[in-house]
Amino acid sequence: VLAGSLAGGAPSRSRSTGGAAETAVVEAEAEAPPVGGRRELSTWASLVSIMASRYLLSPAIAWSLIIALRKAGFFPPVAVDPVLTFVVLLQAAMPPAQNSVIMLQVVGDKLGAKKLSRMLFMLYLLAVVPMSFLVSFFLQTASLCA
Image (tube, rainbow, N blue to C red; front, side):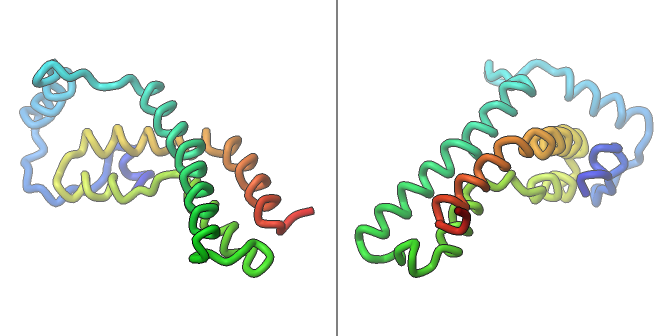
């Protein structure tokens, strides 16, 4: 799905003629000024905000919830189940999934699916560095690594 959207040849369930008029409409919509005075974030601003939320904010919230639930007695201590702690923290920091691309393709938004798939591709490439640090931190936190 991601590769098809990157190439621009993702199948769509919309019934279209695929002619030059449709291509012109899609290009005009892409270049149209924003409705209601809203502007789109630049690609890099979007990437930075998504990365900050996925690799800083989300793990911090998960860690805080683990500590709070542990104090309340609803989450086992690390010594009892270190793998559970590791998995919960790891799930909080994983890159976003491709479900949004699929949903955009189903409704026939080829341009949106293409933009989102390119952003996800860049996120996956950039996720290598923070994920390596986070995994090593999570392994140490869960007492699975010396």
